[in-house]
Amino acid sequence: MQHKFGFTTSTSIVISNMIGTGIFTSLGFQVFDIQTGFSIVVLWLLGGIISLFGAFAYSELGTIYPESGGEYNYLSRIYHPAIGFLSGWVSFLIGFAAPVAAASIAFSKYFDATFGISTLMGEGFPINVSMLLAVFLVLVLSFVHSTDRKTGSILQISFTALKILAIIALIAAGLLFGNASGVSFIPSDQSFAEMITPAFAVSMFFVTYSYSGWNASAYMAGEIANPKRNIPLSLITGTFIVTLLYVLINMVFMMAVPVEQLQGKVEIGYIFADTVFGLET
Image: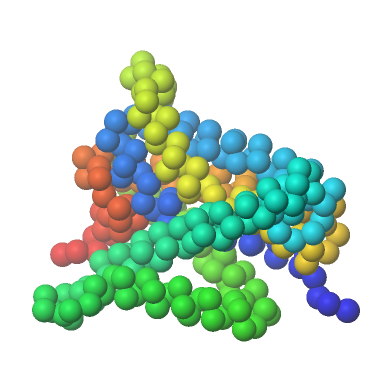
């Protein structure tokens, strides 16, 4: 009998798909116009609530149509196969390709910032090292997931555990050592004023990108054991855990690093680690 995924594996896939580069790159763009701690917390909490609404909807659909395919399956069954077909192509060309590209590029930037690969290669090196690293990452992971399902599953679960442990470690370090900015998370007139500005709405774009992946287990519904139980539990549990982690990590980012040092920066996690641990001397 074919092995099927249980609750733990399904939930880890949801968490792993959600936690990506967005949480470590978005804050720098948000704090241009949203600079109070309370507004940032509300922003990320609101993103989690919206994702939970989606998880509830997919939970219902997943129990009715427990086949793999996600919205391709749901739209084909509910409306018309042509709509599902178009949705599948949009997901293939943009919905999945773009986040994979963005994640790999962000990884390469962090890797280069940490190890200075571009500096080692020298200014005359004819190839963009960051782009080369990004392409290499996509090729390696694609090869692993397409050749061995069991190995790909183990790799996914291992990455999920590492992501959670890393974020918990950063949160703990921020709470213990990061209080340089003096930011307050108490509601104020300024924070309420920020929440009704166009900038707050625009910032939701970065938040929803960071929360994307809350529907991950629905794409493999046909491979999940007891889908009527495990699909809803994995979607809701995974989304709730990620929401909690996202709110806490953004709080410690703002606690540890002054807002002006975050503005416009992509490598927020690196800046935070440098501030808290003193990576540069």
